[in-house]
Length: 296
Image 1 (tube, rainbow, N blue to C red):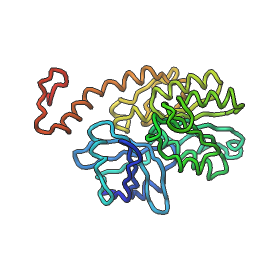
Image 2: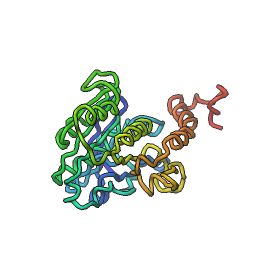
Image 3: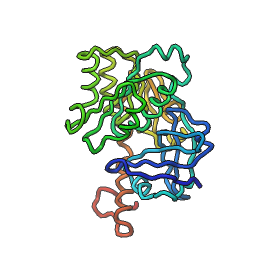
C-alpha cells in the first residue's frame, strides 16, 4: 500500500496529493508518469509526476475530477492509501539527456494550460536547479482555476499568468500571450514546451510553427491503460504511428495529428458517462433513457 501523506484541494475539482513511494521517487525524472489504482477493483489511472522528493521518498500527483474513478479518488484523505502506485513510466523529457552547456545556451518557454501546470512544474524546477531560467506562461479559465502559481514563480525566469476571462493576470488565451511576447515584447525562444488540454496544445503548435519555434507537447491526456496494451493512446506523429504511454508521452508537436487524437479520445465519453451515472445514482441506475445503455 502507498500512503497518502498530504491531500489538498487546489481549485474546483483539482486536487494534489503527496504519496509515499520511495522506489518511484528514487528513479523518476521530469516528464515521466505513474499509474495509480485505488483498490483491487479500481481503474488504472495514468498521471504525470508533478514533483518528487528523493530523500523523503515522496511523489506529488495532481489530478482533476473527470470520470467516476477520479471523483472517487478526490475523496481520499491524508492517511489513506493507494493499492498500486506504479512507475516511473514513459520517457523523461528530452532535455534531461542533453548536454548541459548546450542547454544553457537555449531560451526555453513553457506553456501550461489548466492542470498542465502540474507536469510543467518539475521540468522548470529541474532546469532551475541546473542554472537555466525558463519563461513560463500559465493559463487558466478564471482566477480561481490558476494552480501552482507560487511554485512556478519560484523556479521560472519569468512567469506570465493569463486567464481566459481576464479575471487575473493577462487577459486571453495562452497563445495571445506567447504571440505578444515574441511580436510585441521582442522575446526570442529556441524551444517551446506546451502541456495542457489537446485543443490548447494544437493551437500553440499552430502558432509556434508560424513563429518557427520547435515545440514539444505531452500527450498524457489520451492515455488510458499506460502500458501500451489497450491502444487508446495511438497517435499519428508525422509518418509514424506512436503510442503515448510507451513512446512518449512527449512528442514533436508540429508532427502530431491533433484532430485524429481528439477524435479518438471522444470514443470513451459514452462509457465514462455511464460510469459517472452509476456512481451518482448507485443501485437506482438501470438505464431506460435510451441513450446511455444502463448496465448493458
